[in-house]
Image (cartoon, rainbow, N blue to C red; front, side):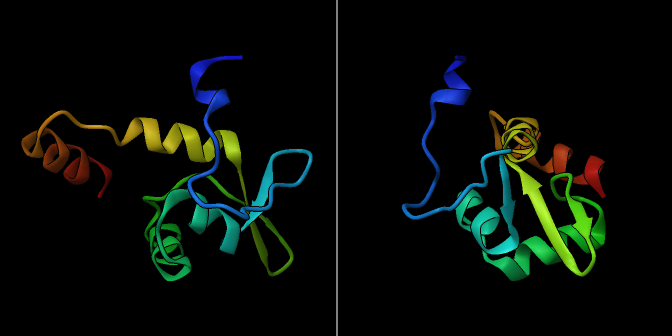
Length: 87
């Protein structure tokens, strides 16, 4: 297991399906954002990858972890540059 795989969910009680999927509520809790923020990121195309099954959206833990890693920054200047790039 890599260091990233050994990390625990961001919030207690986050439910993850055996295949690594989470619904919107659990994915938002895992990321530490509100479900509404996650919906905004999704509609703007700047959030983590998701799967849509009918009306339901699911997020895979690996995609959430990759999105977190891709948005890491060492300074506010670097963070602003990342933010501009994703828009």
